Image 1 (spheres, rainbow, N blue to C red):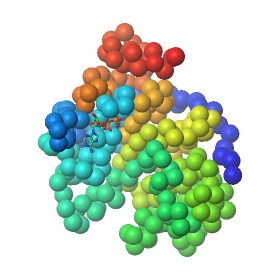
Image 2 (image 1 turned 90 degrees about the vertical axis):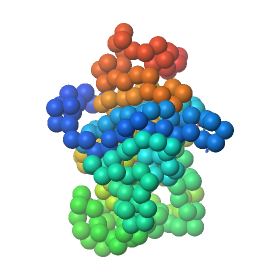
Image 3 (image 1 turned 60 degrees about the horizontal axis):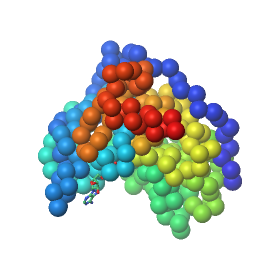
Length: 276
Ligand code: ADP
């Protein structure tokens, strides 16, 4: 199947009211991660993501983006620092608290193929997080049977319901990534982390997936962190962005400020890289 939605990349306008209506969802303070061998992958990173906002995290390969994401997703422990989700500490938690935090933090990774069990239909993979949590259908769909909820979820990401009965190898990369997005939003996370969500897709598909993310953000009021080495994708998705270099934040800017003179030289170099 090919991606069904013909769309072009059209940035929405800057969200000027974000600061005035600010309600912090994620607050990160002085986060560090040192790996054995003294690799200081994340160095004193602090930032806030407000409700309904997308924060871009940009930097070259090896700058610490994925390490930062893994620490905040509680997939590995940081070496020091604090992080709160709607005011509740999320680091170094265990048991039921940890499970609850992980439900509230969902992630869409780069490679959709590795996100699915090859033996399961997309229907079963899609509903797995909801079933694990006792199947309460999300508030943004009409309540109904599991099948009906699954159909509404794939409709939300502009896929035909027939894809539910397919196995992962029968779908394109873009289609699988759409199902991964539907699965991540199904449990109504407090924060979504997109870790290079379009990097493994064909260029022609990337813009369509970014448009879908932008549409869902507007429609569902998603709060998210969008990680990418691609400055144009980050600018399209994010009201505000941070630039990581060697694990440190070297620059911060709003969508409007990206091309201003005051940018850090490293950001300017990244811009040149993408302007070709
Ligand atoms: P990015 O996502 O920006 O490419 P990473 O977070 O993957 O960057 O890596 C940041 C730094 O941490 C790199 O120097 C990388 O080699 C190192 N690193 C990442 N994961 C590990 C690990 N599990 N053990 C040791 N070093 C690691």
